[in-house]
Length: 377
Image 1: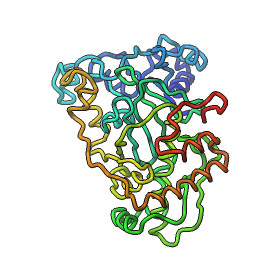
Image 2: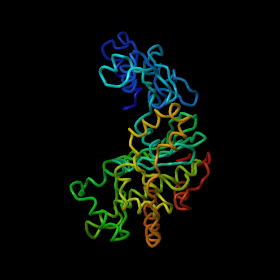
Image 3: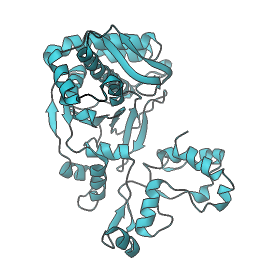
Image 4: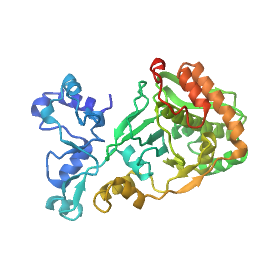
């Protein structure tokens, strides 16, 4: 209901909107229009993905658009991100202070721009964004098809794929009881305390969308925390368990994320949390220095102008950041808690036996795509 396609259909269906509309556009298209003076500029295939654009066929999915009443005559042309879309007009230059004639290039969605800024720009590079939610995004040469719908893919400007998914769990879990606390101090105490004896899936509300799709999913505790320090530590571990399950699911679909994994987002910059995640994942995690959307937009703008292409721009402009390695003495305890977590999720019917087995068989998952018989969930 929140997709671009649904919004276009809703707007056009109100009070003769279809008769009066000259075009449909995304917010990013309006910015390009104001900057260039072109009332109907092209859009990029990143923003167009959820508005009915088929990145596999590289064309609008007219059957879907026809079904919801969005006429093809209103649709913008679609081009790859980082494509030149015009130049800053004299009117826009006067209004903004940008130089007249400056190139305007097409961008990407905020999530994809953040992914570029983290350096997860080429096949087998992945980044985990620990913000309000837990988001895992990466690049692959082939399209990963997930029958469960937990993983979907944007298209890379070079034609590769950008698979990923967003959980309903993440940094927001810390809002319950810790929102007004000094998280730096809590991090220090969590590191000093060591692994929690209890296990939690810190989902707020009902329903999960990644790494599994379950509308009835709800948070749970296995055991009770002895104090606030243990409760805080258990929440950090619970999100890390979900992250490991996410990479197991991606591995089962056919990708193999290279080391080190990249980390971004406000929660991703926590060294205590990064150490827990690295230990749970049993692989190093690099904490990106500037993995924000503005940096990603700057890298996109430099691709094809200051640098030959997007990978070259990323290599020149993105700094790897600090590498956090697993805490070996905590590995056994966290591995045991992770297995309890996976068993509890499977017992509730949220994942099938195939993913359950892949999740606990190794840190990189099964590494092979799901068989037709198991449905790929």
